[in-house]
Image (tube, rainbow, N blue to C red):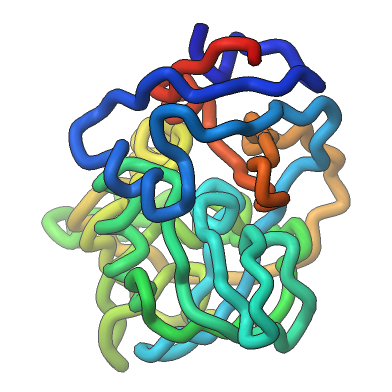
Amino acid sequence: MNLQEAPVGIPLSITHISGGAFPARMERLGLYEGARLMRLDKVDSIGPAKVRTPKGDAILSAWLAGKIVIHLDDGRRIPLPECKNGDSGHVEGVTGQSAVEEALKELGIVENDRITFLRSIPPMIYKFSLYSPSLAQESARQKSQISEALASHLFGHTPEGPAQFSSVGVGTPFTVQRILPGGEAEATLAALHVTAGMELILESVAISHEVRLSQDAPVACVTKEGLRLYFHEQDAAKIFVAPV
């Protein structure tokens, strides 16, 4: 069976891991054929986080934050969402596919680079106007809003340089360059007509009082050495295990 299908609370042994470069990435975290782990039962949903990287500050959606394992200065290895404000260390590994590494690299986060956990991000709503530069008419402008998770997946250009949409100031023109991979971000934003080349003008940011069910609750496990790891379903399905 794969890890997604595995029962909780039972010692498991990895039989093999599939998926291109994924096995090598997991081996660096101590997951390889014969390694022991156990799937955990109840896991709190992971939220977005603000971190400091060698390139500056970045906001990570829950989808990306949960995939980073950090080796803290005090010697502990923990998932990034379990850090406390001010915790620092280096990126030990990433529990995801190559597209995840590329997205993190875009934000200045590379394996072995130093990273500092600044704080968790509360649920926010970003309200903006949107239009295509090829359609100069004011009538082509539309209003919309997205969550902080989707805003953090938008990477583009501002007059001050490249940035995430979650980091721009109110009134700053923002041209979408690409949508960082993660969950259903690309499909959700496309449904709102937010695609590469579109220009967004942030109008306001406010704390969301809406209670929404998170789609970022991961498949969690703990290794024999005590390292907790979070996987999303498509990655957990590539790790095959058998009861010990």
